[in-house]
Amino acid sequence: MNIVIHDEDLHSLDQDLKQYPTSDWETFKQAYTVSQMKMNSKDSLTCMQYLPDLELMSHQLDAVQKVLHQMHGRAILADEVGLGKTIEAGVILKELMVKNLVKKVLILVPSSLIRQWEIELQQRFYIPAKAKHRSFPWHAYDVVVSSIDLAKKEPHASEILDQEYDMLIIDEAHRLKNPKTRNYQFVKQIKSTYCLLLTATPIQNKIDEIYYLMSIVRPGLLGDKQSFKRTVRTERQDDSQAIQTLVKQSMIRNRRAETTNEWTKRDIETIRVDFTKEEMEFYNTLESLNVNHSFTSLTLQREICSSREACYETIRHSEWKDEFKNELMTQIEQLPHHSKALKTVEFVKSLNEKCIIFTEYKSTQIYLQWLLHQNGIFSVTFNGKFRKSKKDWMVQLFKNKAQVLIATDAGGEGLNLQFCNHMIHYDLPWNPMKLEQRIGRIHRFGQTKDVNIYYMVLNNTIDERVLNLLYDKLDLFKDVIGELDQILSQLGINSLEQEIEDIVKESRSEKEASIKVDHLFSVISDSEVERNIANESS
Image 1 (cartoon, rainbow, N blue to C red):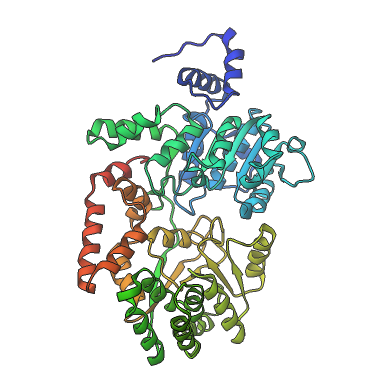
Image 2: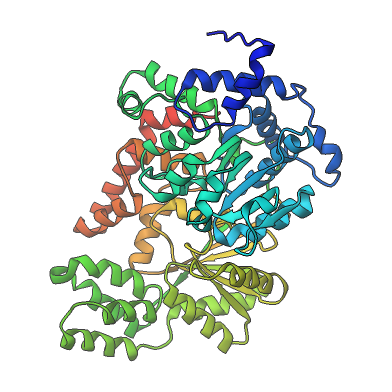
């Protein structure tokens, strides 16, 4: 449908543009046309003359131009971890500011990333961003960076919703996947002419999630929710292709393997460790609990493969009878220092360079820091419960003084640590996507060295089974990982980690588990859904 817009209509339609969100798709399309007419159609970027030290990669330049000239400044930037989504967003914002199309900007990010965004915009893009403090009102500065947790609370929410922003940017936008949450409902009400959502995982569990993200940047484009759900579940290829075409109108997803840039290499090494006799006996004791305590046995096996402390805490807080609990805790207390931990310390010493250690458990994190300290190695910890100021301090300590940073997955979100090129996976996650997100903290835009990845694996334990079942079978570092979250969603698998755990618990032998995992991966690999989704943004 061709929309004819006369000059006398521009003012009223421009006002419509400022009234997002709207469910009126025709008005939305007309308002977009106004936006296109106002925006310079030249492919060259005016802002680059003001950013002499910034050199864009080809995929970043393509993304910026596509957002500006095809998506009219409203898009989901869904590049894989480490490809420079923040830089793309910064250039888009700078270009719109240089062209006097944007002045008032609201940037909502996780609290741990507020300072990072403020510094990045100020120092790299010369944009006067200001981190929000309770001491000044929201309208006091033109470019404000805040956490969504603060912004959604009163009296802040009312003040924000009373304003009309030229640009809204939301980082880690996958947190908006659930329309029932306060986060989503708040963001949906913010009025903005332009809007950028940044996320490396636009779909985490269900295909519906892309619908809700798209409803923020392009309300009405995918129709109503029920018709969208019916369409994506249909087996007709033309319907599926139609959805993909619509999504491509407002989402850009670059993958590392498809970029033309030369990335540093990623080398992987498995470091195998043997339990002591005492540790192995206790591990076997936990394994034998399957008969009566299957709901915790596997958890305890995973924890004892990480540290005595992690396992001890779970047992101590369990609802088992005191006599049984005390017996197990006494056995743990008599164990020597953890073999994998000792091997890790030995390896870090021999490495003699900065490295990041990822663990699944906070108790293990504390234990490893203590053990490293006992061996003269300065380390810092990093987890999701730290306040923003402490997270910033820990990163600076790691960059300037400490040899080791010990992080949990919850704390690793949004970290940019490309000044380090060694990473130890002390605990292997049962969801390969978590592993790729970890690695993306160092193997990213700006990394100048080859990246070295190490798996610490205990022989003859659940550690080794996970390695054999998952990482040796699934070619983790190929393109499929970039799409694994989407493929699983389409197959009705909400959690790969839970799926694997169920297979391990229910299998009577490792051979049986291996066959089941092989079958699971063959379904993933052969799925027509994979082929469709893989082409979604190519």
